[in-house]
Structure formats: structure tokens, C-alpha cells
Image 1 (tube, rainbow, N blue to C red):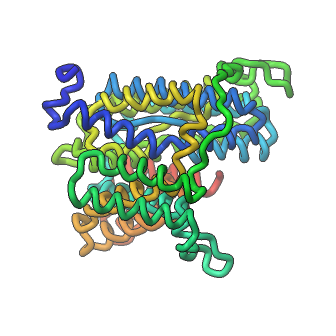
Image 2 (cartoon, rainbow, N blue to C red; image 1 turned 90 degrees about the vertical axis):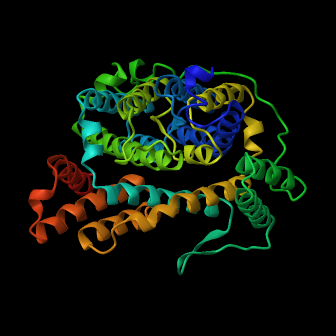
Image 3 (cartoon, rainbow, N blue to C red; image 1 turned 120 degrees about the vertical axis):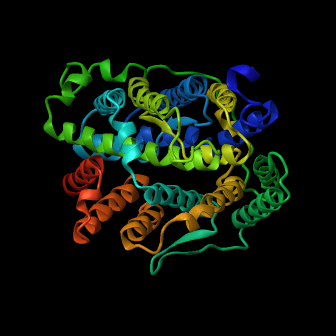
Length: 438
């Protein structure tokens, strides 16, 4: 096992990989409950959505671990599942099987782009300052998710957001989880983030924050599998054929493609920085296999009826906990399969319990902010835009898109357009089209 996953070579141990896998799983386990809840609005039976979510995440995460040997977990992407449910099904009015066909088709297109080397080439064309900014912006995004979910940040009608009610049980557990995560990280305790999650979950029981399951569901429902090739009740034909009959759906495929394409790009860079597997150029040596597997995730996610399986930014929490190889993915994949039968157990881990781990991960990802060249506006402003737009718009894709566009625009104004790489031009134009037309 050590030789297969290069555990010792990367300065890790089996124990660290297991702890890292557990940490990532607990940080992203919310998807087991959240994704089915969203897909139910699209008309998918809850049990079918739950089975598809768990098995899709398990298969793709294990595949990523075995083939790429990187601690990058995959599951149904937040944002993409919302497009499926609320834009395609409830907005345009197509059947959920047709929406899943759109996901499958965008995965096929992305895989072709990966095999042609385009996705990798675009990553290499991104200036270093923008790459750093993507990771920093995602760090703020992760911290915001943690603080919002833990009640530390709350909604406000007058100021949009404000501080939460710190004396409430939810906030108390969140503050305890932050305190534990910070202390254990400062003391360099192995598995400190995982310990903080488990401890906060236990503390939350008497406070009523951690809900102990009253019922157990051990059943599986595979009826959503093969969704794009099931019959579209609106047309009587195969769902995948409906996509080609409605031009609006092809535009939706493009929107899904842009989100999947660049979300993963940003996530991989961010986790690579945290997991210390970026080379001296800021690249990942086996990036082609990572991007190819992520593309297959969209195809499989659409086929399973689970929405696109994409690389999860919460993988950074596992990397922070010590995960360096694909062995941690086997742990995550196994847990997804187990909890396909016992989802209520995962439901015990509240957002308050993971608040500390996500906040500390956000802090760790912010530490590279001093490496950005803030002295030159052509580097600094696009980096700034990227950093602030990602958390403020709750979208990695929006931040990357506006960062790319502003970079190209400033380089044109400064008379340095010839220094912009052709693929950066193409990416910026594609983003501009996405913002205008979708």
C-alpha cells in the first residue's frame, strides 16, 4: 500500500491519510442531505436522489484516488445542482431526466476538451498572481461557508449580513469548534480538525444542536440511474434527445460547462497549495488525469441522476489534516457507501460542528496573500477582484471570470495586450459571453 500510493515518499503515513479522509468526509458530508433536498424540488424521489448522491460521490472519489493519487474528493456540486433544479426544471420547465442529460452532455464536451489538452493549457496560461488569488478567494469562501452555517454570520435586511446571536446554542457550539480547531492546529495535534468536529458534535447533543436520529433508513433506490436514457414524459422520446430539440437547453449546457470547467480549476489549485503538491511553477504534475476524472464525474453524475460530480473545495480540510495521497479517497469513498444506508448518522454532524475546521482552513489558504504582486495594478486588481467576488457572489466561477476579464481589459489599456496568452483571451471572451447570455 505504501508503494502503491507513495505514502512515505510524500511524507505521510497511513494514519494521517485515514484522518485526512475522515476530515474531508465530515466537512463535505452535508451533501448527503442537501443534494437530495434540492433534487426533490426537481421531482426526483428523495430515496433515489440519496442513493445516486452517495454512490456517485463514492465511485468518483475512489477513481480520483486510485488514478491520480491525489486527496481530491468529488460529490454533487453545489450550484450546479441548483441550476438543474431551479433553472432547468422549475425555470424552463423540462423534466428532471432532461436536465440530467444536459449535465451528461456538458461532461462529454469537457472530457473532449481535456483529452485535447485545452483545459490543461488554459490552467498553464493563467498568470501566477491570478492562480494565487483563486486559492485565497476560495479560502475566504470556505471560511464564509463555515461562519454562515455556524450562525456566526447572519442575514440582515439592512446590511445584507451581520453578526449572529452569539449566545444561541448554535453559535456557542460554533465558537467552541473554532476555539478547538485553532488550539489544536496551533499545537500541531495530528487530526486536530477532525477532533474539533467530533468534539463539537458531542457537545452539541445536550445543547440541542446535534440531532440524534430517531429513525434509520437502510433502503436503496436506483431508479434515477440512467436518467438521460429514460423516457422524457413530455415528449415520449429519450430524455437526451430532447436537449437537441430545444436551443435554450444547449445554452444551459454551455452555462453548466463554464461552471464545471473553472470551478474545478480553482479548487484543484487551492487544494494543491494546501496539500503541498504544486511544483515550483505553481502547476500540478499529473493535472491531466485529475481534470479527465473530474470530467468523467459530470458524465457519471448526469447518468446516475445525481447532478455533476465535481471536485470539492472541502478537500482542502483533509489536506490541512495531513492527507497527501489517494489513500484518503478510499476512506471517503467507503464512508459514502456506508452512509448511503445510514444517512441519519451524517446528519448528526451539524454546520456548527464543522464551522471551526472550515474557518481554520480558510485562514490557512489566506497565508499566500503576500505572494501576490500588489505593486502592479495589472496583477493586483484582477487578483483583488477574484478574491472578493468568489465569497461575495458565492461562486468560484464568477470570481475567476471577472478576474480574467479585468486582467485582459487592464492589459489592453496599458498597451500590453501582446503579453496576454491566446488562451487567456479565449477564456475571458467565453466568460464575457456567459455573463451576457446566461
